[in-house]
Structure formats: structure tokens, C-alpha cells
Amino acid sequence: MSLRGPGSRSHLKGKQDVADMDERERELQRASMDYIWSHTKYVKTYIVVDKKRFEMWDENVTKTTEKVMDVVSQLDTFTHEFNTRVVLIGLEIWTEGNLIHISLNIRFALMAFNRWRTDYVFRRVIHDIAHLIVGHNTGSAMGDAYFRGTCTYYKAATIDSFYHEDITRFTNLLAHELGHTLGMMHDHSGCRCGEQSSCIMNDAVTHESRYSNCSIDNYYEYLRTRGGICLYEKPDPSRIMRKSVCGNRVLDRGEECDCGSVETCSKDPCCLPTCKMTKGSVCAFGPCCEGCQFRLRGQCLPSQ
Image (cartoon, rainbow, N blue to C red; front, side, top):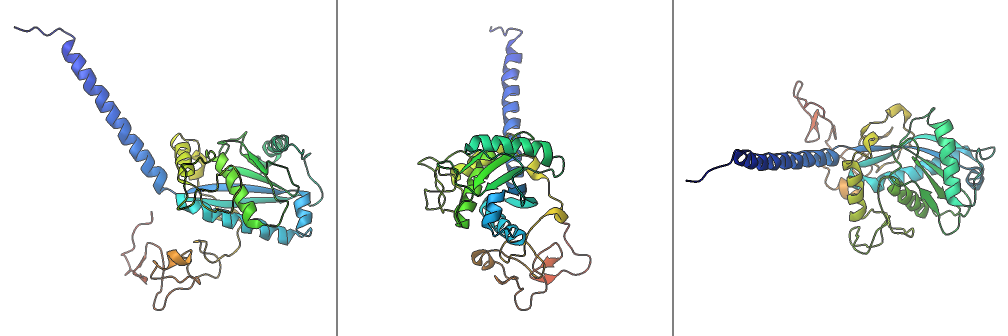
């Protein structure tokens, strides 16, 4: 006759409890990742242009503003792949002179900008990240950023050198430094963006306009550990600075619809790449639109 000690049953039950807890943890992680993937993130961005770069844009405020919005619009297309939008909520142009000493040492310059940002900007315009665009050549390091700095009060800053006129190259630099603030590390030999191996987070700035699989994994790990909690907050539409651009998947003034690129528009029966609706279409999106036609009254789907 076998005897069972008084602790035997509870020992078996304890193992089951641990297994149940592990399964619940896995379910929570899966639910968390589903939330992260499905919800749009917004990087609410404040940009400062230094005096040198302003001079390079002919000391013209309108031209400077348009160039910055072009950069942000292009940058926003890079982050669409992982359901993240880059929106400009503030622009400051140092037309009379720089408000900080911009050291030739890029790390010192970043530190000075960040101190000024926390002292004078954050109390006026709450933002997720701030970029300082400088017009001089900063040497071998063309940009600098605080790793995982987005959504923090003390580290939400980058500095980016735009001493030339290659706007695509500069946008990629800005995307690279933004990537660091979102938890992305430099790519290694196993990282890919489509068929390419030289992606945005390469340790040298390239003209490739895609983040790698490694970068996206880094970003979602950052979000999973709640590093980017502020990104889920939608910006006030009245604060967003943007110019009307057909193809950015945002309905701007004067557009009937905006299906994005030629490729994405080819899959949209309601909207043309020209941001006009297809023949016979009366709507292109929204809870009351089905098959490019308005639903009958009372049949609208609830908005998500």
C-alpha cells in the first residue's frame, strides 16, 4: 500500500498553477502584440531649424517651412509599414540667431539642445520627439540621438546635419536618428529590407528608404516593454502642420480620396492615384461606405 505524503497533492497542484500562470502570461503577451500591431501609433514631432540652415534656404520662412514639411511627409511614408505616423506639431525657425551654442562636438550640441528643449519647449508644446536641424557639416557623425528617447521628458531629442541639398539623404538621416529614439539598433549582416541589405538603420546613411526586419523587431520590443506609451495618443488635428500631398494616404484639402501609392491604389476600387474617385463612386472610405456607395440610412457600421 503506497502512502501519499501530505504535500504530494499540493505539489502537483502547484505545478498546474505554474502552467496556468505561464499560459495566461502567453495569452497576455499575444493580446498585447495584437494591440501593438493593430493600433496606429503617432510620433508627434517638434522641429527646430538653426540659423545656418535657414540661411541656406535663402532666409525665407515660407521656403523653410515647405522644405521641413516635405521631409516630414517623406519620413511618414517610411513608417507606414509598421502602422506608425510621423506628424509635425511644431516648427521653430531661428531666423535671428541660434538660441543655444551649437558645439562642433555633436554630442555636446545634442546635450545643449536637449537642455534648452526641456527648459523652454516642452512647457509650451508637448511632443514625443524634437529634432534640431543644423546647416553645418558635423564631421563623421552626421546625427546623434538618445536611444529610446521618444516619450521621455529628459531624452526626447536628436540633432541632424543638413549641410547639403540632397533631401532624400537627409530624410534618411532623420529616419535613422528617429529609429534610435524608437529603440532601433544598427543593422547587422542578417538584417534585410525586402531584397536589400543596406537599410535605414545601417551604420552609414544610405538612400534606401525602408527599415529592416531587425529594426521593426527592435521597435515592437520597445513598444512591448511600454517604452512608447505616448505614441498611442492621437494628436489634435488642429495642431498638425502639413501641406496637401496626393499619395500620403491622408485626406487633405481639395482631395476626394487618397489611396496612397500607385501600388496601393491599384487595389482600391473607389480611388485613383490622382486622389479623385473612380467613375461611378460616391464615397471611398468610412463606416457608411460600402462598395464605393453609401449604405442605406440606418445601416452604417459603428466607427472603430
